[in-house]
Length: 401
Image (spheres, rainbow, N blue to C red):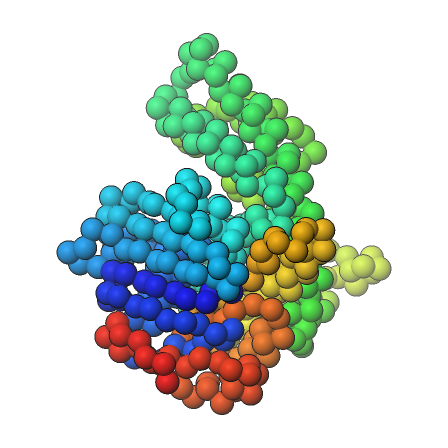
């Protein structure tokens, strides 16, 4: 858990220092700096901002860098400095490290904010990252495979963009890359599939809380991004001509996706011809079932609840995995506490959903930072957490209420 947080020159936060509690409510007007505080924690954990990828966009004007430093309750320290040219300095316990994943492992951070509320309609990247966040923290072998796969994929795509006709030397090189991609892809898929299977019951439970009337109609599926029954290098070889014409690799782990399906026993005539609808038999093979993307059926408010269920369901799974791993390590091994960042949830969720979300979080061993335009949420927070901190932010300055 973060015991002390220091932020320098990030947006309008010139010099900020605070001592967080298990639950922290940051109240302030729009533009006051409350979301920037969450952005700083996310930057420390992930090495990037959830608002803009270019450091010069969040480094304070006329400053060369932005710095975030955190001391955890077991005396571990984490720090990141981002410079305007995107140069990054990382430190763990005052020692320079060279891989962001080292800090990410120490500080798992889950974000629920307005920008994630369009996840169902956006491309597959955000949904794939949702699964990969879990896999990264639960399977140590995943990240090296993912990094190696991305490196080979970048080389392959670079070659595909350069030419439409390969020489024998380039073709031989491409085949070597494809074999490597295939080996990494098989392991990445293995990790993803196992974690996805473990995730499903937690998602179902979360849906039953937030969308109880739809609990039997919503289901989660995982698409690997390629036909896993055939080695990826064979499929890449068969599609090489098309990839050359398009200039990029169309199948593989990088095209994996998570889908939320809606199932109904009432087959609407108007939807039978839709390409987004699948009509199949039910579990008994008798009644017709209409199956389509949940995003096509649910209202805007229901989609928000569904996305909240997706993210919220990840926490108990991760915490159970941490608990299990703690049983097999020494007492000197630091315990990992996930950090949950909730940005302006009162504007995105109704009162019932906020109650369920905060009640669930209060029962889990995680640290919470939430922002709000007003302190109306304070009474509920004070009922659920024994000693929450209430901070007020104004023009980049923070005070403890």
